[in-house]
Image 1 (cartoon, rainbow, N blue to C red):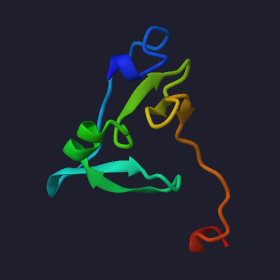
Image 2 (image 1 turned 90 degrees about the vertical axis):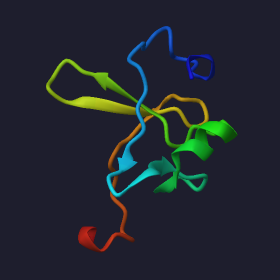
Image 3 (image 1 turned 180 degrees about the vertical axis):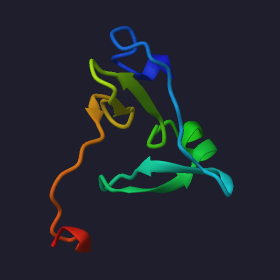
Image 4 (image 1 turned 45 degrees about the vertical axis):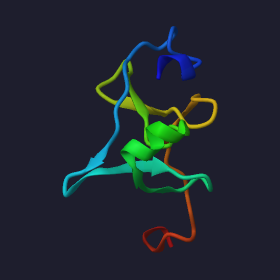
Length: 89
């Protein structure tokens, strides 16, 4: 994973996959369309897309940032207003 992570030297915090407690090979993923979904953990590592691989980074507060290794590995999970989500209307 470190070879594919362009920020591995700057941010050496290790990697995690968030698995489904009822199905150990089903992981949280950032899918190709940019939405969250589920994907086989093993298949993701085999195909090298790293849609299920994240790095948890400490901050100066009690919060953490969760960085995705998908694409350029330089984006963190953030929230934003989405009018298509019923709870936000």
